[in-house]
Image (cartoon, rainbow, N blue to C red; front, top):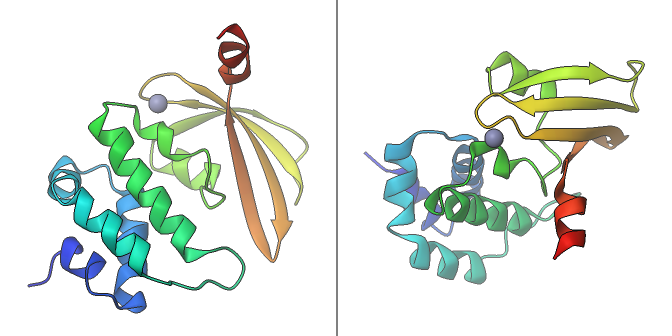
Length: 150
Ligand SMILES: [Zn+2]
């Protein structure tokens, strides 16, 4: 039986990308712990691979999976995975119980959501747009203010 780590290190794009997406989605400590132990090898694999990508770079998604592992290692909330990637549909996240949608603008292709993480209560402003496919840009509330204070 092959593991997620085997897929990551296979050098085969058709195996690496599903492993990348599964890592980004996963909230399973057993899965994530096994990958964390191999983080240096994963970083090397990420540096050596050219994963291509038609609209967005698959290498960026691999990098996002690695930073998700770092957030997990550092004890950050699951919702730390949302900013920086345009593929998290707030309605799907709500269906899974990960977030609550507090309010939205008038529904349409281009609209906004205000959401709250059900684990830590962090609020996000989400902008939905359409460029080849629907995307969502998650911006945590309060971040700008904190940055200004430093
Ligand atoms: Zn959270």
